[in-house]
Image (cartoon, rainbow, N blue to C red; front, top):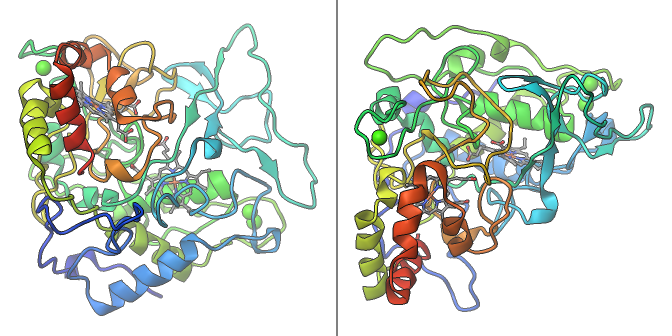
Length: 410
Ligand SMILES: [Ca+2]
Ligand SMILES: [Ca+2]
Ligand SMILES: [Ca+2]
């Protein structure tokens, strides 16, 4: 059985923010490094990464366990722009269908064939069950149906190397310092600090993508590290208790579970964990001016220029906290057990500060892909980021162009 030995990984250099290393070839093709592994992986991990990359594009068939319901037949169906591990166009969006009042939401009870709040679009042969549909809201329990657009996975796995304290130390749940920003951390049902997903609802890659395989493709898996995959790296005591993460996923489609072997799934985990962040393109006078303005007007209060990790600083431009982004972006779904705050107990209008590394590679933007351009994404900032968006809007056109020039080299 293959296992992933994170502890053995010697990362020699992680120069995600070095600049100059990347480049866009003529015709706009991203450089060959995008979609590759971080440097310094031992040979066995590198081989697992490469096998995992191939499995990302494998199209599962009903005979292999696809279904009974699914949204796509491969991981890469949603993570393929511009290369395997990337994001996806709007047409790949899927819906949540969550019933109840946040935070007491769950799958729609009048559609018992839908096992989770992820609404599957298709059913696999032999079509023993009807195609799932969103039932109308019952008078008692509202049903919300927000969309999700796939984020790029580049560099994301490295958030497993971020110490819990590096996340929790930046939170300010009741805005004690009065700057209008009250970011807080999110936790899993087992109280582990979240890093992954649009609401920081998952703590580690293994748990997150076992859910993706099951919810998006109907592919069942057994735990690999299980609860031992929980990331903490905290210098303070935090309870790390186990739950369903150590249990197999199963379904009744007649194909024996697990439908993805432990070996194959370990390879998909290796790919997801060690996919390197895109290199920054070379600076230009405009991008340098824009970088200074990005900091000056306060974008860096949430999009931190550097996040400490056990393998060196990550230039991910996120704080891994969730923020209230205002009513227009709110999606009505609450996930996780967020840090208590006086103003809100749920995450229905909160989102993780999206990492900005690799931004140039994967329009559309925001959790549901509603923004076609980077500027549209900026103009959608409200809630905690209201005053900072207003500061952006007050800039001259040249200054705005400089900020966009900066974001386009990331
Ligand atoms: Ca299945
Ligand atoms: Ca604050
Ligand atoms: Ca099965």
